[in-house]
Image (cartoon, rainbow, N blue to C red; front, side, top):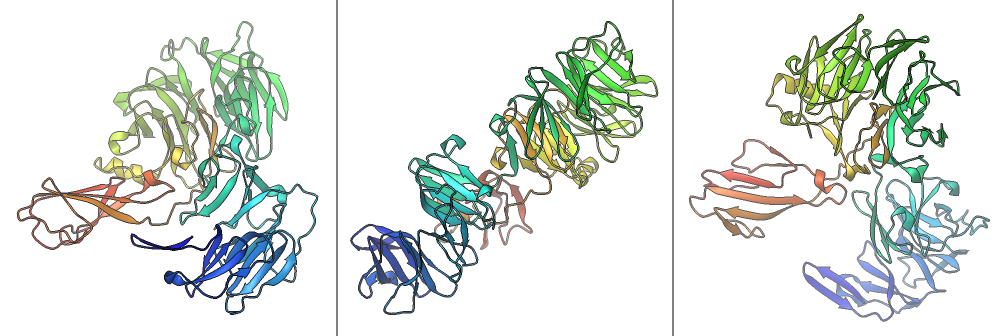
Length: 598
């Protein structure tokens, strides 16, 4: 049955066998594959024109029209083309073999072989080919707006051939173990926001390139429970776990110190890796591991915080023994320092001025400067609560992440921002900066990116709400940002940000955060005037002396519905646009006595 919907009206025509494909050409003619026949219908009238035309074999794929007006389809044994302007509708056999057809955004037709190899239609070069590579039981193919080829199969899930590559080794596959609802794929669709929708025998699935990538045990991590991270050269990142230390790069997931419980990590400027383990402090230099030689009687087996100062002295905090400094084999014991005694150090960092900063579990910061310790507290502008993060950016500025806010050192005082200033939350887990000088802040529900100018503005004007970009589960973040030992997040040498989560490690590329620029369709849903609900499907007339109006509206986005932001204006009433953020309601009070347009 073929039908046409206009508004709420549906008109149908019975065509016999089940419809397998349908195409409407620019003239409004409908081309329909029903059973083993091709039929044509005259637009909305649903009147068949001409006789049904027998296909030269069982239909396989197609009914796609190219830029020249030719219509392409395939049977189980041949690739066919016909001229839509040919009244006799004669099929031209292009080549033998099985091919599945797709069409890209430019109107170019692509053909896919049973092994997944995909190329553009070129009648002089088309060949069914021969391949020793395993073939797929293909059912449907889609060419997306990014130039990727999606292949839906019967029994093997969905495959994606990246970009213009015809190398089958670049093919990704997704099946039920990856979260696909079923392995029998019936249909594929790309929407205007470039989501890819996959319909299987068991449900509907959405694919889209996430802004946040995730590494778990499935991708080769030794454990999903990572304690700390350290960044090495050439984009390498090290992760400490309860079963050893992972070295992670583009292609490898190597495990070192297998079976050891690793905690604090530090990669120093000479690319020497320092690690606190249950067997003591170790370091790795030029690929060789060695235990750190300490003074007799000192055994540090619970080191969670490691930092280095300008003299290459390494500061080690042990949960049970306190703070020590190692320099060229000599160990200085600071466990009885009055400002630190009985307190846990949660974070430490050396700065460009030779100071070493320590964040404490009881709140406040202690700094070691020119051989002496002194402290900063709330009276110096710090937020209250424990200190989770100490960070020194590329310009030497000291930042503090605390239970109750984000702070920046200015002279001898700290400036603090938190939820009251518009930031997502109060508690800061970690702080990083990127090559564009933007500040990244880890919260328990996601990651915020904020510019220094926004923070400066809020510092000058406390009424200003800090604007930020927020990444969470809607952007692909699996699990929540988490904190183990001090380095819960690092910036790799290639500029990517790595962060510990409750489900492994997440990766964000600050240079590759594209925004969804597709404007969603907006709909006004309800209008309430002085408690009375009015019909918004037609022109609204308010009763005289109406004092309160509420307008409910929404916008349809299947990519990031929670993050759609709105501005609205009641023309004739509002002098300018109002920024509603994510709120989907507008409120007006006062005398409304003119004609307005919302």
